[in-house]
Length: 78
Image (cartoon, rainbow, N blue to C red; front, top):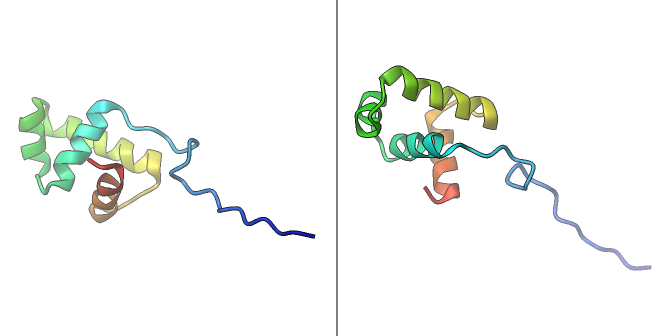
């Protein structure tokens, strides 16, 4: 009898929701320390649109803080 170890599946597998390119860009700016207003200006958007992108990211990935978003951006290589 032999045992085979299987790594548990994590949220980073293929079943994890993917982020749209503009969501990734907004996340990259926020992770770099930009404010919503600075991010909006750099992306050519309104502050409210940036807020909507980041709310969508939080909902898709079930995260609630900027620190978690920053950790996510780092793990994604953004």
